[in-house]
Image 1 (tube, rainbow over the protein chains, first blue to last red):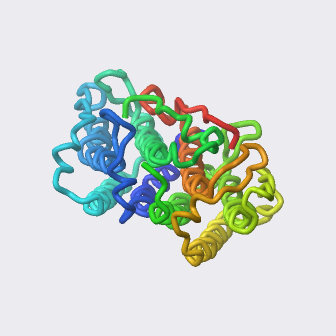
Image 2: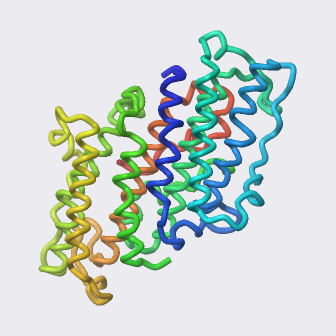
Length: 180
Length: 180
Protein backbone atom coordinates (compact mmCIF):
# COMPACT_ATOMS: atom_id res chain seq x y z
CA UNK A 1 0.00 0.00 0.00
CA UNK A 2 1.54 3.25 -1.09
CA UNK A 3 1.21 6.41 0.89
CA UNK A 4 -2.07 8.21 0.23
CA UNK A 5 -2.52 11.63 1.79
CA UNK A 6 -6.28 11.32 2.25
CA UNK A 7 -5.90 7.93 3.97
CA UNK A 8 -3.26 9.41 6.26
CA UNK A 9 -5.48 12.35 7.17
CA UNK A 10 -8.40 9.97 7.82
CA UNK A 11 -6.36 8.05 10.32
CA UNK A 12 -4.73 11.10 11.96
CA UNK A 13 -8.18 12.63 12.41
CA UNK A 14 -9.48 9.63 14.38
CA UNK A 15 -6.64 9.05 16.82
CA UNK A 16 -7.43 11.72 19.44
CA UNK A 17 -11.01 10.42 19.73
CA UNK A 18 -9.68 6.86 19.94
CA UNK A 19 -7.43 7.64 22.90
CA UNK A 20 -10.24 9.70 24.42
CA UNK A 21 -12.74 6.83 24.20
CA UNK A 22 -10.25 4.45 25.76
CA UNK A 23 -8.67 6.58 28.48
CA UNK A 24 -10.95 9.40 29.64
CA UNK A 25 -12.10 8.70 33.22
CA UNK A 26 -10.59 5.23 33.13
CA UNK A 27 -9.44 4.45 36.71
CA UNK A 28 -5.89 5.57 37.49
CA UNK A 29 -4.99 1.99 38.37
CA UNK A 30 -4.95 1.58 34.58
CA UNK A 31 -3.72 4.94 33.35
CA UNK A 32 -0.94 5.75 35.83
CA UNK A 33 0.80 2.36 35.89
CA UNK A 34 3.57 1.46 33.51
CA UNK A 35 5.59 -1.64 32.60
CA UNK A 36 8.23 -1.05 35.26
CA UNK A 37 11.44 0.98 35.51
CA UNK A 38 11.47 3.98 33.15
CA UNK A 39 8.70 2.70 30.87
CA UNK A 40 5.74 4.93 30.08
CA UNK A 41 2.19 4.83 31.33
CA UNK A 42 -0.81 5.99 29.30
CA UNK A 43 -0.51 9.51 30.73
CA UNK A 44 3.10 9.75 29.52
CA UNK A 45 2.11 8.53 26.05
CA UNK A 46 -0.58 11.18 25.58
CA UNK A 47 1.94 13.80 26.72
CA UNK A 48 4.42 12.48 24.15
CA UNK A 49 1.79 12.69 21.39
CA UNK A 50 1.14 16.33 22.36
CA UNK A 51 4.85 17.07 22.24
CA UNK A 52 4.96 15.59 18.73
CA UNK A 53 2.12 17.84 17.63
CA UNK A 54 4.02 20.88 18.88
CA UNK A 55 7.57 20.12 17.84
CA UNK A 56 7.78 17.23 15.38
CA UNK A 57 5.36 16.60 12.52
CA UNK A 58 4.20 19.94 11.22
CA UNK A 59 7.40 21.84 12.06
CA UNK A 60 9.28 19.22 10.02
CA UNK A 61 6.77 19.41 7.16
CA UNK A 62 7.26 23.19 7.07
CA UNK A 63 11.05 22.73 7.12
CA UNK A 64 10.85 20.44 4.06
CA UNK A 65 8.59 22.84 2.17
CA UNK A 66 10.70 25.90 3.00
CA UNK A 67 14.25 24.61 3.06
CA UNK A 68 14.32 21.17 1.42
CA UNK A 69 17.46 19.22 2.24
CA UNK A 70 19.48 22.28 3.19
CA UNK A 71 18.24 22.51 6.78
CA UNK A 72 18.15 19.35 8.93
CA UNK A 73 15.16 18.84 11.23
CA UNK A 74 15.48 19.73 14.89
CA UNK A 75 16.10 16.48 16.81
CA UNK A 76 12.94 15.32 18.62
CA UNK A 77 13.10 15.16 22.41
CA UNK A 78 11.56 11.86 23.49
CA UNK A 79 11.28 13.07 27.07
CA UNK A 80 10.07 16.53 26.13
CA UNK A 81 6.61 15.90 27.53
CA UNK A 82 7.69 15.43 31.14
CA UNK A 83 7.73 19.10 32.10
CA UNK A 84 4.84 20.04 29.81
CA UNK A 85 2.53 17.42 31.35
CA UNK A 86 3.39 18.24 34.95
CA UNK A 87 0.39 19.09 37.11
CA UNK A 88 -2.13 18.35 34.37
CA UNK A 89 -4.89 15.75 34.44
CA UNK A 90 -5.20 13.10 31.77
CA UNK A 91 -8.48 14.74 30.71
CA UNK A 92 -6.64 18.02 30.12
CA UNK A 93 -3.99 16.23 28.06
CA UNK A 94 -6.63 14.51 25.94
CA UNK A 95 -8.30 17.87 25.27
CA UNK A 96 -4.97 19.44 24.38
CA UNK A 97 -4.04 16.61 22.02
CA UNK A 98 -7.39 16.84 20.20
CA UNK A 99 -7.07 20.61 19.89
CA UNK A 100 -3.49 20.59 18.57
CA UNK A 101 -4.17 17.72 16.17
CA UNK A 102 -7.14 19.58 14.69
CA UNK A 103 -5.09 22.75 14.21
CA UNK A 104 -2.28 20.79 12.59
CA UNK A 105 -4.60 18.94 10.21
CA UNK A 106 -6.32 22.21 9.27
CA UNK A 107 -2.90 23.58 8.34
CA UNK A 108 -1.93 20.40 6.49
CA UNK A 109 -5.11 20.51 4.40
CA UNK A 110 -4.55 24.18 3.66
CA UNK A 111 -1.19 23.31 2.08
CA UNK A 112 -3.15 21.62 -0.76
CA UNK A 113 -0.22 19.32 -1.36
CA UNK A 114 0.20 17.86 -4.84
CA UNK A 115 2.07 14.68 -5.69
CA UNK A 116 5.23 16.60 -6.53
CA UNK A 117 5.11 18.30 -3.12
CA UNK A 118 4.90 14.90 -1.40
CA UNK A 119 8.09 13.90 -3.19
CA UNK A 120 10.02 16.87 -1.82
CA UNK A 121 12.98 15.93 0.29
CA UNK A 122 14.26 16.99 3.67
CA UNK A 123 17.10 15.94 5.93
CA UNK A 124 16.61 13.95 9.12
CA UNK A 125 19.46 14.48 11.62
CA UNK A 126 20.04 10.70 11.96
CA UNK A 127 18.26 9.04 9.01
CA UNK A 128 19.49 11.35 6.26
CA UNK A 129 17.32 12.16 3.26
CA UNK A 130 13.58 11.56 3.70
CA UNK A 131 10.53 12.70 1.73
CA UNK A 132 7.50 14.66 2.86
CA UNK A 133 5.43 11.61 1.95
CA UNK A 134 7.48 9.44 4.32
CA UNK A 135 7.18 12.02 7.09
CA UNK A 136 3.38 12.09 6.84
CA UNK A 137 3.08 8.30 6.65
CA UNK A 138 5.29 8.11 9.74
CA UNK A 139 3.03 10.53 11.60
CA UNK A 140 0.16 8.04 11.15
CA UNK A 141 2.27 4.96 11.93
CA UNK A 142 3.66 6.71 15.01
CA UNK A 143 0.10 7.20 16.32
CA UNK A 144 -0.45 3.47 15.80
CA UNK A 145 2.81 2.58 17.55
CA UNK A 146 1.54 4.37 20.63
CA UNK A 147 -1.94 2.87 20.46
CA UNK A 148 -0.19 -0.51 20.24
CA UNK A 149 1.94 0.48 23.24
CA UNK A 150 -0.95 1.73 25.38
CA UNK A 151 -2.98 -1.44 24.77
CA UNK A 152 0.08 -3.42 25.88
CA UNK A 153 0.73 -1.26 28.97
CA UNK A 154 -2.90 -1.60 30.08
CA UNK A 155 -2.92 -5.38 29.50
CA UNK A 156 0.33 -5.68 31.47
CA UNK A 157 -1.55 -4.65 34.62
CA UNK A 158 -3.61 -7.86 34.35
CA UNK A 159 -0.74 -10.18 33.45
CA UNK A 160 -1.27 -12.14 36.67
CA UNK A 161 -5.01 -11.62 37.07
CA UNK A 162 -5.74 -13.61 33.88
CA UNK A 163 -4.20 -16.78 35.37
CA UNK A 164 -3.57 -19.61 32.88
CA UNK A 165 -5.09 -17.64 29.97
CA UNK A 166 -1.93 -15.55 29.74
CA UNK A 167 -0.40 -17.88 27.16
CA UNK A 168 -3.33 -17.28 24.78
CA UNK A 169 -3.09 -13.50 24.97
CA UNK A 170 -0.69 -12.17 22.36
CA UNK A 171 -0.46 -8.74 23.94
CA UNK A 172 1.07 -10.28 27.08
CA UNK A 173 3.86 -11.85 25.02
CA UNK A 174 4.81 -8.48 23.50
CA UNK A 175 7.81 -6.93 25.21
CA UNK A 176 7.78 -3.82 23.03
CA UNK A 177 10.09 -3.47 20.11
CA UNK A 178 11.84 -0.15 20.39
CA UNK A 179 12.45 2.72 22.72
CA UNK A 180 9.14 4.50 23.22
CA UNK B 1 -2.31 -5.33 40.19
CA UNK B 2 -4.96 -7.77 41.35
CA UNK B 3 -8.19 -8.22 39.51
CA UNK B 4 -10.76 -5.60 40.41
CA UNK B 5 -14.26 -6.03 39.03
CA UNK B 6 -15.01 -2.31 38.76
CA UNK B 7 -11.74 -1.69 36.90
CA UNK B 8 -12.58 -4.53 34.51
CA UNK B 9 -16.04 -3.16 33.84
CA UNK B 10 -14.59 0.33 33.28
CA UNK B 11 -12.33 -1.01 30.59
CA UNK B 12 -14.89 -3.33 28.98
CA UNK B 13 -17.34 -0.41 28.79
CA UNK B 14 -14.91 1.73 26.78
CA UNK B 15 -13.71 -0.73 24.17
CA UNK B 16 -16.64 -0.60 21.69
CA UNK B 17 -16.37 3.21 21.55
CA UNK B 18 -12.61 2.92 21.11
CA UNK B 19 -12.92 0.67 18.07
CA UNK B 20 -15.74 2.87 16.79
CA UNK B 21 -13.65 6.04 17.05
CA UNK B 22 -10.75 4.36 15.25
CA UNK B 23 -12.52 2.38 12.54
CA UNK B 24 -15.92 3.85 11.61
CA UNK B 25 -15.76 5.30 8.09
CA UNK B 26 -12.01 4.79 7.95
CA UNK B 27 -11.15 4.05 4.27
CA UNK B 28 -11.31 0.36 3.35
CA UNK B 29 -7.68 0.51 2.29
CA UNK B 30 -7.06 0.43 6.05
CA UNK B 31 -9.89 -1.72 7.34
CA UNK B 32 -10.04 -4.51 4.75
CA UNK B 33 -6.32 -5.25 4.45
CA UNK B 34 -4.57 -7.78 6.64
CA UNK B 35 -0.98 -8.91 7.30
CA UNK B 36 -1.00 -11.51 4.53
CA UNK B 37 -2.10 -15.14 4.20
CA UNK B 38 -4.85 -16.06 6.66
CA UNK B 39 -4.24 -13.16 9.04
CA UNK B 40 -7.14 -10.96 10.08
CA UNK B 41 -8.07 -7.47 9.01
CA UNK B 42 -9.87 -4.96 11.26
CA UNK B 43 -13.27 -6.16 9.96
CA UNK B 44 -12.45 -9.75 10.98
CA UNK B 45 -11.36 -8.62 14.45
CA UNK B 46 -14.60 -6.77 15.17
CA UNK B 47 -16.52 -9.87 14.01
CA UNK B 48 -14.42 -11.98 16.37
CA UNK B 49 -15.19 -9.64 19.28
CA UNK B 50 -18.91 -9.96 18.50
CA UNK B 51 -18.62 -13.75 18.44
CA UNK B 52 -16.97 -13.60 21.87
CA UNK B 53 -19.86 -11.52 23.22
CA UNK B 54 -22.31 -14.12 21.99
CA UNK B 55 -20.57 -17.37 22.80
CA UNK B 56 -17.61 -16.88 25.12
CA UNK B 57 -17.50 -14.52 28.10
CA UNK B 58 -20.96 -14.34 29.59
CA UNK B 59 -21.95 -17.91 28.66
CA UNK B 60 -18.80 -19.09 30.47
CA UNK B 61 -19.51 -16.86 33.47
CA UNK B 62 -23.01 -18.37 33.68
CA UNK B 63 -21.53 -21.88 33.41
CA UNK B 64 -19.22 -21.20 36.37
CA UNK B 65 -22.04 -19.75 38.47
CA UNK B 66 -24.45 -22.58 37.65
CA UNK B 67 -22.25 -25.65 37.33
CA UNK B 68 -18.85 -24.83 38.84
CA UNK B 69 -16.17 -27.28 37.77
CA UNK B 70 -18.62 -30.02 36.82
CA UNK B 71 -19.36 -28.73 33.32
CA UNK B 72 -16.46 -27.70 31.07
CA UNK B 73 -16.90 -24.60 28.91
CA UNK B 74 -17.88 -24.99 25.28
CA UNK B 75 -14.70 -24.61 23.19
CA UNK B 76 -14.53 -21.21 21.51
CA UNK B 77 -14.54 -21.13 17.72
CA UNK B 78 -11.84 -18.71 16.59
CA UNK B 79 -13.28 -18.62 13.08
CA UNK B 80 -16.89 -18.44 14.24
CA UNK B 81 -17.31 -14.89 13.01
CA UNK B 82 -16.74 -15.66 9.34
CA UNK B 83 -20.33 -16.65 8.53
CA UNK B 84 -21.88 -14.22 11.01
CA UNK B 85 -20.06 -11.22 9.51
CA UNK B 86 -20.81 -12.12 5.89
CA UNK B 87 -22.57 -9.38 3.94
CA UNK B 88 -22.39 -6.87 6.78
CA UNK B 89 -20.65 -3.52 6.75
CA UNK B 90 -18.03 -2.60 9.33
CA UNK B 91 -20.44 0.06 10.63
CA UNK B 92 -23.05 -2.63 11.26
CA UNK B 93 -20.51 -4.77 13.09
CA UNK B 94 -19.45 -1.84 15.28
CA UNK B 95 -23.10 -1.19 16.18
CA UNK B 96 -23.67 -4.86 16.96
CA UNK B 97 -20.56 -5.09 19.12
CA UNK B 98 -21.59 -2.01 21.14
CA UNK B 99 -25.12 -3.35 21.60
CA UNK B 100 -24.06 -6.83 22.71
CA UNK B 101 -21.36 -5.50 25.04
CA UNK B 102 -23.87 -3.21 26.73
CA UNK B 103 -26.33 -6.07 27.22
CA UNK B 104 -23.59 -8.30 28.62
CA UNK B 105 -22.32 -5.66 31.03
CA UNK B 106 -25.87 -4.95 32.21
CA UNK B 107 -26.22 -8.64 33.01
CA UNK B 108 -22.79 -8.79 34.66
CA UNK B 109 -23.64 -5.84 36.91
CA UNK B 110 -26.98 -7.42 37.79
CA UNK B 111 -25.15 -10.49 39.14
CA UNK B 112 -23.89 -8.27 42.01
CA UNK B 113 -20.85 -10.47 42.34
CA UNK B 114 -19.14 -10.62 45.73
CA UNK B 115 -15.52 -11.57 46.34
CA UNK B 116 -16.48 -15.19 47.08
CA UNK B 117 -18.32 -15.39 43.75
CA UNK B 118 -15.21 -14.19 41.92
CA UNK B 119 -13.28 -17.04 43.47
CA UNK B 120 -15.67 -19.66 42.14
CA UNK B 121 -14.09 -22.16 39.82
CA UNK B 122 -14.96 -23.54 36.42
CA UNK B 123 -13.31 -25.87 33.97
CA UNK B 124 -11.71 -24.74 30.73
CA UNK B 125 -11.57 -27.50 28.11
CA UNK B 126 -7.81 -27.03 27.57
CA UNK B 127 -6.53 -24.99 30.54
CA UNK B 128 -8.28 -26.91 33.31
CA UNK B 129 -9.48 -25.17 36.46
CA UNK B 130 -9.92 -21.40 36.22
CA UNK B 131 -11.74 -18.87 38.40
CA UNK B 132 -14.51 -16.45 37.51
CA UNK B 133 -12.09 -13.65 38.42
CA UNK B 134 -9.57 -14.95 35.85
CA UNK B 135 -12.30 -15.23 33.21
CA UNK B 136 -13.39 -11.61 33.68
CA UNK B 137 -9.80 -10.30 33.74
CA UNK B 138 -9.19 -12.25 30.52
CA UNK B 139 -12.24 -10.67 28.88
CA UNK B 140 -10.59 -7.24 29.40
CA UNK B 141 -7.10 -8.39 28.39
CA UNK B 142 -8.58 -10.06 25.29
CA UNK B 143 -10.08 -6.73 24.22
CA UNK B 144 -6.62 -5.19 24.60
CA UNK B 145 -4.99 -8.02 22.63
CA UNK B 146 -7.21 -7.16 19.72
CA UNK B 147 -6.70 -3.41 20.01
CA UNK B 148 -2.98 -4.19 19.99
CA UNK B 149 -3.51 -6.38 16.93
CA UNK B 150 -5.61 -3.84 15.00
CA UNK B 151 -3.09 -1.06 15.59
CA UNK B 152 -0.41 -3.42 14.24
CA UNK B 153 -2.49 -4.49 11.21
CA UNK B 154 -3.20 -0.87 10.28
CA UNK B 155 0.45 0.15 10.71
CA UNK B 156 1.51 -2.81 8.54
CA UNK B 157 -0.15 -1.15 5.56
CA UNK B 158 2.37 1.70 5.81
CA UNK B 159 5.43 -0.44 6.43
CA UNK B 160 7.00 0.73 3.17
CA UNK B 161 5.45 4.18 3.02
CA UNK B 162 7.36 5.30 6.14
CA UNK B 163 10.73 4.74 4.44
CA UNK B 164 13.76 4.83 6.76
CA UNK B 165 11.63 5.63 9.83
CA UNK B 166 10.48 2.01 9.99
CA UNK B 167 13.28 1.07 12.37
CA UNK B 168 12.06 3.62 14.93
CA UNK B 169 8.46 2.35 14.90
CA UNK B 170 7.99 -0.44 17.41
CA UNK B 171 4.66 -1.50 15.97
CA UNK B 172 6.39 -2.43 12.69
CA UNK B 173 8.77 -4.78 14.50
CA UNK B 174 5.87 -6.69 16.12
CA UNK B 175 5.08 -9.89 14.31
CA UNK B 176 2.22 -10.80 16.62
CA UNK B 177 2.64 -13.24 19.44
CA UNK B 178 -0.11 -15.80 19.19
CA UNK B 179 -2.82 -17.05 16.92
CA UNK B 180 -5.49 -14.37 16.76
